[in-house]
Amino acid sequence: MATSPNATQITPPRVSIIDERTGAVSREWYRWFYSLYNITGGGLGVIPVTSGGTGLDTIPTNGQLLIGNGTGYTLNTLGFGAGISVTNGLGTITLANTGVLSFSGGTTGLTPATATTGAITLAGILAIANGGTNGSATPTAYGVAYGDGAAYAFTAAGTTGQVLTATTGSAPTWATPAGVAAPVTKTADFTVADTDVWLINNKSGSTCTVTLPTASSWTGRVLRFQNYQAQTVVSATSNVVPLTGGAAATSILLASTGDQTTLVSNGTNWLVTQYVPNNILLLE
Image (tube, rainbow, N blue to C red; front, side):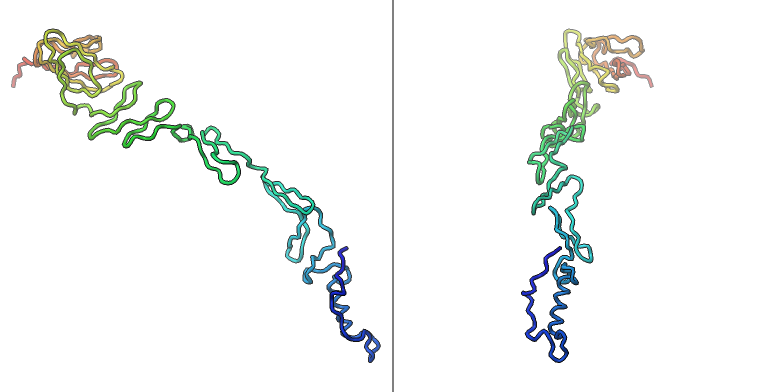
């Protein structure tokens, strides 16, 4: 049971307890006793909430708090949800995090850069599988990103009119579109460059041998040859199909000045699709 308040701290009336006129308890003392009765909870020794008490006669256990219930107080301990623990001790309540105590970026490549408490700042490099670049170099201004098998690399910036071209097994590069390159004159055996379109043979004294691009890497590419010398122009390998069809051979131009031919890659060989002799006679 709760201890009753000290009645001596409540000022008693300054009149006689017995009213001389009635022989009963005086009105002032009756009110004083009645007040004590109410303060101590109607004789139960429990001070109600309305009188500043708790309305309870139970001694709290470790960690119990007075919690309002709408009409008075209820003794109860703190509740907790997932990831939180509550430890009740003698006059103490300890809350602890039992949920997320560490952080991992998994396969993303990201890691916590700071402690596992408070705000967590992400560090590391986002993996390609998670939408990142896996530590690619700083992008080149106006360059284009391309995969190198492990990360991303970047091309240099192109120039006006160039397009991005690629060769099997090589990084993409900027090049002038086929058909708009300036004619290139050769005076010795040569290898066709990626950007070559118009090729003029001006090698004197012997056959001009040309190393053509690998046809499988240039399906649909067009090459045009013209002869300034009375020397044959041949391919370094048998990968040129004659105008009349048949097996691939090496002949590109006959030993006649002014002759012209057009080669187109079909993905396997270079096909002669047009041959214009210089001495052709045109009839109208």
